[in-house]
Length: 358
Image (cartoon, rainbow, N blue to C red; front, side, top):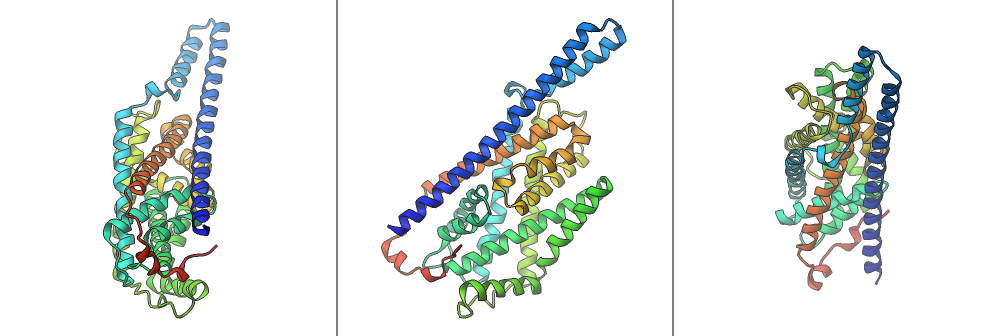
């Protein structure tokens, strides 16, 4: 009965978090739409009271720019949105494969499909305040006779920290290469340094050892986690692949946004899109807000507005949130529906005393 209540509470928390994220995105989209309509109405009034041909031509050009930036469904390039969703779906798998590799490296024996399923299901926890639900969901989905729950917690921690570290580093390097304003450049460099340094194996082992002692006891076998340069190097490779795909997906969404089209989408634009989405997602994660609500939009609009315009940047940020959410919920729901049921015999062999708390 207690287990059923806990599962219901987790499911309710995830649903509430998802609903809050969708409502927040919809509210921001409506706010931007109203702002554009207000600008158009103001320009219409000026056109009615202006007779000078040159002034009218300028006002008409400004009005047409605002009209082109309206977040209308018909104006969105849905083929690019579909392509962006497919690329984002592909981006979920490198981190999931690394999660499986970490578990194997720590002498666990999960099935590849089970590890991938658990990792992707964990994305639902991002939309619950505090982000701890990510670890709870992944641990609950993978723990069993072949994977100890305590080891799964540490593996999830390793994968998440490395993902954020590589994302911060990618953002920092690209921002420096693009010669962004000094304040943004210094922020990106600082974030990259703070994110990358803890991934040194010696520091990683220290952190894991402390987590092992404080949460699972010194006799749980987690002190010698086998974190070495080979594991960290493989993790950097997987995560670079993941962030490259996420950046490509977001670049497609920018191109699909009304009013954001440019003469040619250059490699510098791809770098800018990747740096912006990586920095936004890392900052959103650090904020501990559900889905990084508000934080991601602020970072994206700040970085993208000089190139694509403020309104298209905000619309692209909201579109990215909705598309990424739809992909995660869709694939997560499919994997949950097709998950293997744990038999009573399997459940009895689980190391339940390692289950995470708090």
